[in-house]
Length: 293
Image 1 (spheres, rainbow, N blue to C red):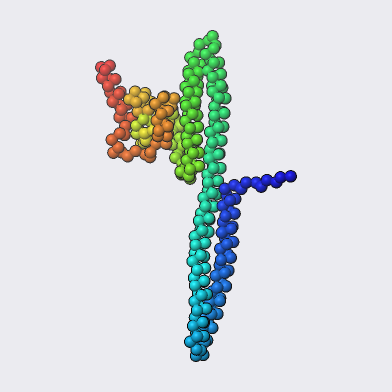
Image 2 (cartoon, rainbow, N blue to C red):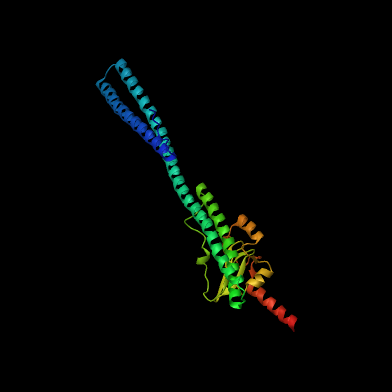
């Protein structure tokens, strides 16, 4: 009957290598200890002979014996230093392997999250479609129901695009995590963490330029190439001047792949590309009033 040994994993191999290095170092250290003890004895013997006035031949033999042991001890010390370097290298390799194992575990969880979202998305799509059909297939035409159906259909499109985006971002994060390039300890604030007003109606949009506007008495600033819940009052002018676009827009999908959706920090007030949406809206309003007049 044949017996097969289980193949060791990376961490186990590094642990075995480190254990072997430590064992070899211990043996070398013991040999060095013996050599140093012998050297001390040889020195003491040579000193006694010299003090006692021994003849030159005996002193020569004592010194030669002492130098031989001294050379052996010196060689062992050098080997021990080399072993210390090898042990340190093995410890680093083991630490790196454990870190990679931890990164792989986190990346697996991230990929599992993306897969779970992909599995759940069709259910949401089907539920939203059923709500829309409940209104559109009816022979009655009720304004409130029509508005509801339109809103649900718009949300369905946004969720579909957002699901595609987050799955792509999660898988990108998993790749970076495996490579050790992710910084999960300080994630970018999510949309839910962005300041918002309960009374303000918003729509999730993707910014094409850095934007600024006033909200609840405070200045809001967001960078280009980021997701933002934009107040609907500012949405028409922002869309008209192509400062934002919908998540399902083709160019947005391309820009998300190029730049992601977290932006690059809050824009500075002196940024020449910073767009003041309030000022832009005021200009549009004045222009419209002038046309009417």
